[in-house]
Length: 266
Image 1: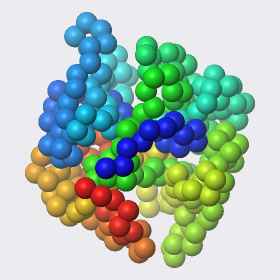
Image 2: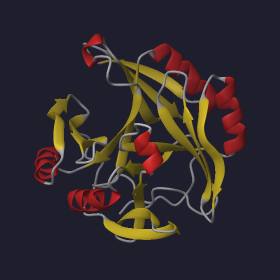
Image 3: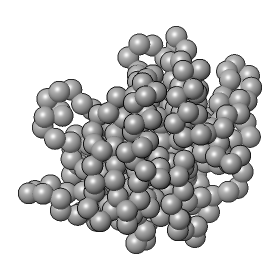
Image 4: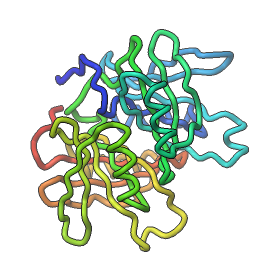
């Protein structure tokens, strides 16, 4: 077991699902990833659901509001980056061209957050620990493993994130494309690819969440059996592993990765 016990600014620290049908999404994810469900009341007939491995928090989900659905919102996963001071980071992000979508506001007994849209269009969140550090397990099956930005302008995105988080950059030649690694103290924390014309106009820039699995093929088949759609079938990436992209029954997209480096335990 690999327990996360410290808050690490500059690292992704939490993932959260906003679902158009929260009640139906719960059994899909609990059965796919063997997560336990803990509903926490946050209002009248309103819950913030912790998704747990054992008794450790891994992720969360909640019901999308009727107003959000009316305005055309779709189910989606949101990734959070840990920061020392949310308000200072927000001010810097706005200077760099980001838009504030929600917050900053305190989450009682847990921390302080804000949701942002960076200049290239991708949406992400910032988290300042105030009792809850975020995901409490790492490098284990069924926990967040990797975060990847799909950008329409990689140079613009690179400039924004390195200025906001002091991330270092390393580029890797992947044959048909260039892959950007974002690092903290030489430790990879995220990646970036640039969208080509093949992506079409309907897919916006976004952060993709990857969850670690021990067997990509069996997990993809299980997701499909539970009502999910396989968008990208299990595919090998040399020296990285085997991944697939899944759309859950409510429309949220995520990826699963079977690592080739033997760094994931059960």
